[in-house]
Image (cartoon, rainbow, N blue to C red):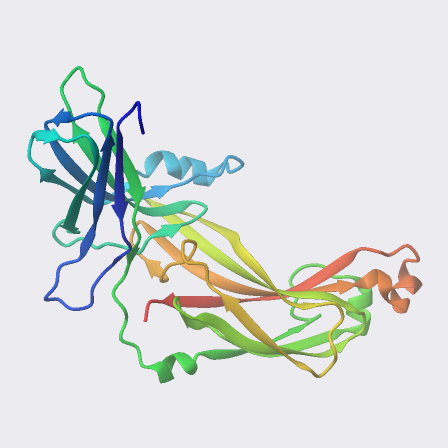
Length: 319
């Protein structure tokens, strides 16, 4: 940059190491680009980690009341002087760094997570400290933190496959009279304990349906809970939706289930005294009622789509 100064912090991915003989370290390079030599009072790095409650603009009531009483939770705050006061030459200067991530005594670093209401975030700020009347130069980036891997036998995870079935009798909401009279049945199985580095797998079969099926989708849901005093607010929101089948499905055909987990929007299932993060998997079957000849007997103008679903708890782990 010809007419200004630039400070850029380049940090790499931070993984919490398994071995107790090594400290958790994040390393990278600070790049200072200046059109002329610059005197400074030192180069400083600040690493912070905190848990913030993000409130939706359309959310009011209990959750908003709790938001006012719940303060951000600080996970870490570390300041390190990388370089002593001096002068930087003209052009681009690279300053390598490596700092250990330390928590207060008895504390813990939770895995990075971007949710709708709960945010676990780690930030690294590089500062070029200058004189009182001179403009400070700084740059901030986010770095990712992963938990130590859980030592869980592979056979235990494979044994957590859960069988499910979706029929007109299992629905808690009102469904079309056509579906109630003709009925439908979808069966299958899915893994409900999954590694974050892998994917959710399973299969489903449409055994019977009185009307054509429009689509079958998998919805990944997050359940965020925040506690304050004797009150707890719980909110469920959708993370992503993956289509398993498009159009009417052949009866008796096993359809594979395969869902990749998004990194930033998921983390290991956890529960603390102040908050908890859980996940669910919802299998949604959408029917084309208007295309069924039986539907015309009830409503000649029927064109709307109706759906049925089954929601299962999903435990996520770092293994």
